[in-house]
Image 1 (cartoon, rainbow, N blue to C red):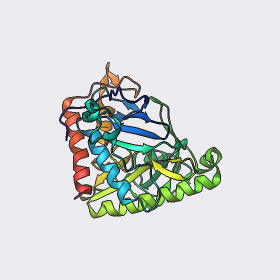
Image 2: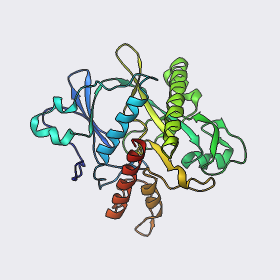
Image 3: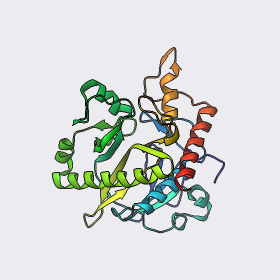
Image 4: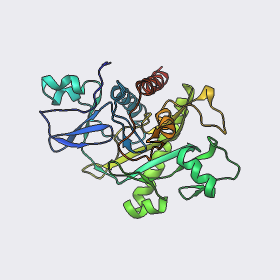
Length: 299
């Protein structure tokens, strides 16, 4: 694994399509995209100014692991071709180990969020009205309680620097159509169930996660982006899990917790760019947690 951090990919052989919070996407002809996972990290939808060394490679390893394990449920966007084959020789080091060469899809404008436990914004909403995104839940649940059944709580995708917005399933059906919404919901829940069951055998609780889908040229629903990584999921070590607490996590919750505590000009950070400067110790600990998750799942 590379020891130097990659904050931004710079390729001269391919046109840049977009830079996301983490990924840099490049066009490969009309039908493929080279997705390069940088070492950037975002929290509260704001990209930190400092990278997490090795993070992009870890994310890619984990996403490829899950695409392979869950490939029987739904088609995914992988082409099976080597990312190194579409860049110039002097660019191979930038993409090696941290890239996926994928089909170009028409992305659905919603995120498929599945929650198996009550945490984060879901816990806050439940305390207020006993629901999460319009889904009524039993009374008496605590922070980090396991839900009776996984629930589907979609969100709209935010533009860079904006916050994703939780929406109801009914609203999702209005946006993409009832039939497609139902298929996305059912597939997302099945993906979550199988992944969560496997992760438990490796001592990891997947509290919640989000999936993204697109349609190919034939209209086939296809799993895309990256899946079941610490960037898109809440991972808890099973050994230290305790209902009623904020469990320690393998994901970027550690970074979020630090950001919640930091002061900027004598006041709590307002969760708007620019982000506070991340100390090296926070970056190092975050990287260690990502590595631990990958090692546990692939053991």
